[in-house]
Amino acid sequence: MHNLSGFFNVIILLGAIQGFIISSLLFFLKENRLSNRLLGLFIFLISLACLNTYLFNQNWYESSSFFRVFSAVMPMVIVMPLGPLLFFYTKASLDPGFKLLKKDKPHFYPVIIDLFPYLTAIFFIIGILSGFIKNHHLHVGAFIDTYNVYSDIPRWISLTCYLVLSLRYIAVNSIKTTAPGIIYQLKWLKQCITVLMTFQFIWLLYLIPYVIPKYTDKLLAAVDWYPIYVPLAILIYWLGIKGYLVMKYRFVDTKSSTGFSSLIPAAVINQTISALKVAMETDSIYLNPDLNLNILSKYTGIPAKTISAVINQHLHKSFNEFVNEYRIAAFKEKVQKPEMDNLTFAGIASECGFNSQATFQRTFKQLTGLSPSEFKNQVLQTN
Image (cartoon, rainbow, N blue to C red; front, side, top):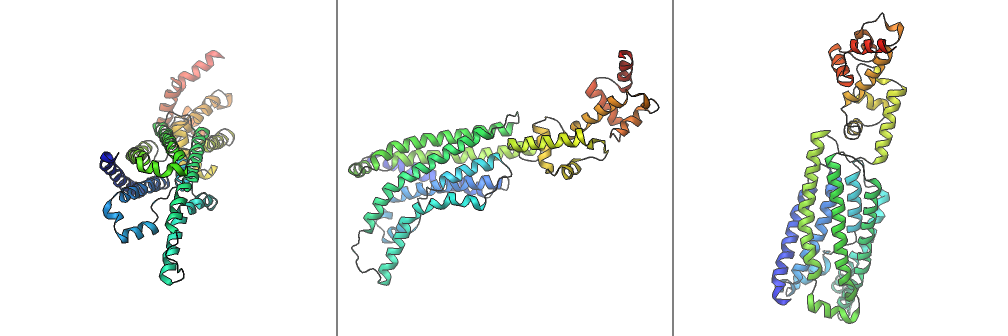
């Protein structure tokens, strides 16, 4: 293991550097800002932990009094927020309207488990410098080392629980659609959680002997932290590059189709479709020849972008196709009524919401395969 330690240290360092670069790129992306920042912070924290491991394996770092104090008071291993960050990243990725609220803050309170040893060291140093603590032989270092061993237990449990919650959220909110952006995003999230679950299994295999006092030092002497941090560095490479590319792919796919994220929760889709049916079938808003997305949005109280995304990606129609289908159906019903015989086709089409004869003729032919006159003759022959 000693012969490979230099190689492993390089892998860990390069993983940390890669993570810092990718997390910065994600943090400053303008598209899908919340989900990108959550993923960026997730990658930043595991990169920081990798950097910490690399530094502790460098003689120049360990032999410096300044860096020993620095490592004691500067939090570099922050694990407890990883689970909540991943869970909320999953939510933000699948729900474009998701926002972090005050009620979500308690998820991050357990970070105190990570900060406690650093706060203890700061308190001890201040106490020594101020003369409040007289005994320089207090075994604070031994206490912190022991604490750090057992604090890995709640860390492992926390991340595992949030991985399960994320997986359940994906299962509940999976949207059946042919939209490439949705399929690609869901596939990515499932892959991400599967890989992290695999890492959790590796961590558990290491953690079991690590927390047993008589094996702790033997394990560290034999393999150090390499069985954890080498896979973690590799994970940073994959998570960072793939996560960044997924965000860019999602934005390009969304921009080319609707200009709005296609990842809409099933409940919002159903609510939007129901509101559209009421507006069209009950209130006949399609009879308004000036009807557009903004008017329909004000009428239903649903954002225009949401309406556009639902019509395009879940009804698989353009807005004009969606509205004109109702207008053509109304025309077909009206043209068969005897009281309409004194009106021209253009007049009936106008009553049905068409403000252009050419648009009416083209749309009617596309939907029925017949011209208006052919349709009426067919109806007369049938009757």
